[in-house]
Length: 115
Length: 114
Image (cartoon, rainbow over all chains, first blue to last red; front, side):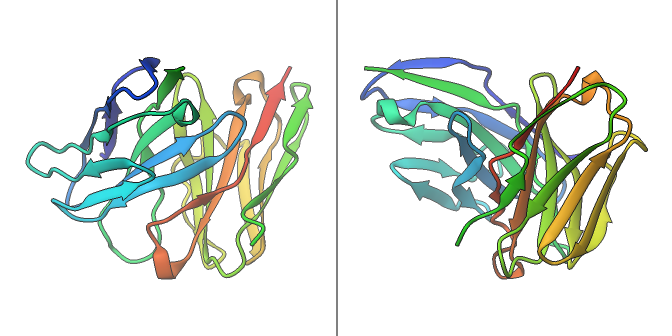
């Protein structure tokens, strides 16, 4: 079956530090990959996505590249801010087969940015 | 757009009681998903609907759980009878066939069963 593994948190960084949150996946076929962010007390928001190998998703300074050869989709940001503190979820959607599918999520990584 | 609307935001109930969670998807979206979030298991898909029809309910944990979508603008998730292990945050999400990859989440319902 499909599964997503991401690094355990919490991850604590200082403001302006470089961020990497690792994510690897197991899936048949060619899934689409996503990063969602959850701020305290809120639902999940889509941060970025990539739908095929070598695609790079980017948004708000965050980037992730779909690496089929390593089955990875690591999240990076060059300079984090206190406002980036949140829980980040890596997720996959299995390949197109008609209709909509549910997402398979990793366990989430709690990111804490200190001033 | 108002986004996905869920009610109630918080629910506290006693074991054995019936609980009904409600969701209004974004207007025009034709797919609706129910997820459950717990510390132990993370985020899990319970069931999803496409054009009001249940497509996959393999994530529904037990017969105590049921979900309906009587029309395109409303869905319910019911637990009867509720148990303490059902305590979790329940999220509803919706997506459009035009952008089937992007699911928009509601704020969630935090359920506590005592």
